[in-house]
Length: 244
Image 1 (cartoon, one colour):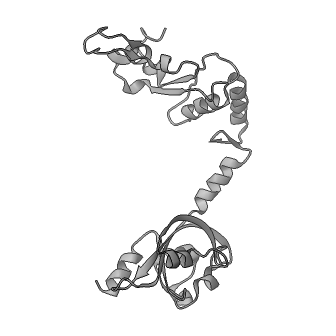
Image 2 (cartoon, one colour; image 1 turned 45 degrees about the vertical axis):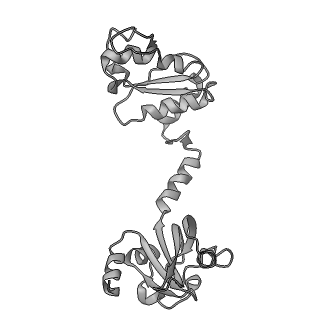
Image 3 (tube, helix red, strand yellow; image 1 turned 30 degrees about the vertical axis):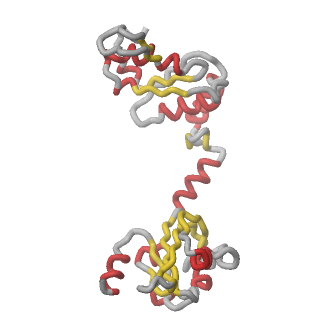
C-alpha cells in the first residue's frame, strides 16, 4: 500500500493518530488529531512531541518510552495535553510500537480521543447537584430527593409514576441505595416483557407439576428478593386480576 493511500485512510478516522520516530520527533498527525490539538501538520512535523503537547507524563514515565523499552502496548491511558491555545485537554490514548519490515522498532503510534465531555459529566456526577446518579438542581427535583431520603427508611411499598424516559428506574435505584436493604438483593422485573400467562409463576414461583411444562420447582422473584428490594417496572401492564 502506498504512503498516500495510508495517509488517506488515517485521515478518514474519527480517532486522532500521531506517529513519532525513535527520537520522539513527530512524523505524522492525522486530521482528527489536528482538530483535537489545534495544531496543523506543518506546525508539528519534525518537532519533539514533548515540546509540543507538554503532557504531565513527558518528564516522568513517558508512555512512548515505555512501549519502546518493553515492546508492550498501552491502552486507555487518560492524560492531559497542552493544545495550541495553551489550554490543557483531557485525552484517552493508546500507544504501540512501530516496526519496519525487519520487525525492528522505528518509533511509536499514538491514537487519542478527546474525553473533555466525559470529564465534565464525571464532575457533574460528583457535585452536590448529583443525587445517587440523578443530576438536577431544580426545586422540584430537590423536593423529590428529600422525599426519597424519607421513604427509603421505611419498609412501605412505593409507587413511582411518570412518563416514559423521566427516570423512574433511577428513582427506584436511589431508594434502594439509601435503604436498610442496600446490601441485600435488588431484583428488577420488567412486567411488559413477561407473557401474562406466566407472570404469576414468575413472581411467586411454582412447584413441580403445577401446570403444563412445570417440570421442576421454581422460586419466584419475590422469594429471591427476600430481605432485599424488588422493583416491578411497567406495573401498569400487569393484569388487574393479579395486581391485588
